[in-house]
Image 1 (spheres, rainbow, N blue to C red):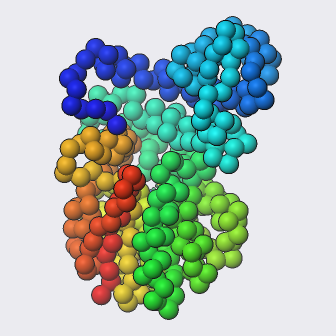
Image 2: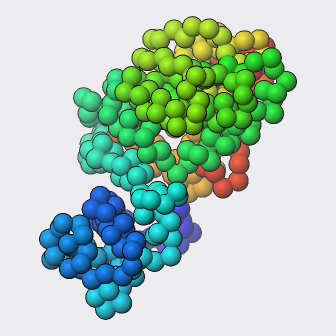
Image 3: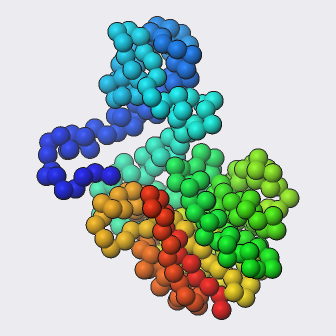
Length: 341
Ligand SMILES: C[S@@+](CC[C@H](N)C(=O)[O-])C[C@H]1O[C@@H](n2cnc3c(N)ncnc32)[C@H](O)[C@@H]1O
């Protein structure tokens, strides 16, 4: 998050003007396998080039730039991994985070944002294939690689819902716009009675199915393919989860959808809205949410990040009672809950 109390300076401007170069530097290093190549120990550019099957000059320039950016350590012509790189950037590590580059720095985001000024003039996306298109390919990447907020977000959902769910006779969950499915799966992992119905586009559900099988939840998960605004879920649910979903749409469409979904809740059931929100405090406090809001502008017609106050209003307008908000220190996601009477 930038420090907004310091004056605008040439240094800050230069950092923002050239930020794309560090994005592409990291992306190239991950895609080429530089960090894996250095996992066995120090190497010089010619050795690394041979391991990567890449050009020697290209590799030398890349390694030096990575060292300049602090992603490698250089000792003369020998390059090594600095602290944190083995854990986060070597593919065999259980904490490997490099795959997120295909989401956070994806070509789909770049293409949507490349003419942001024109997007602003237009007031919405310029793309024919965009975030609202059926099976927009970005969503399968998102479901595959997740974001840094996904697992902590799933734990937040589980910790919020499971104590309440203990008192209920069942825990049937509908996860709308499930993506990877991990929010619903966290509930199933925490409560052996739980079933999860995942609703998303067909190719995204293929990814969710793989996550469910890896988690050993295959027989407790069902899949509902199609447009959340059109598909009529069968059955009734204790919990409807809407994770990072509603900000793709206007408040009016959110009310329309939540009202329909609330009709599928069992008595006393809950709608759980979880995701990034932009609040009314200092914008820098919600820096990542505001950057995400630019993306919603660039690849939807009416999407816009809503505040928790707006979500409470949406839930109330959809007929749910006692809308409330939950936050977790250090996590950029917030939860808004509404109850079926
Ligand atoms: C930002 S992702 C959220 C994934 C997950 N719930 C999370 O919070 O990490 C949005 C998901 O909504 C899905 N989606 C977008 N529009 C949809 C629609 N009209 N019907 C069904 N799914 C949709 C996308 O395919 C994507 O998986």
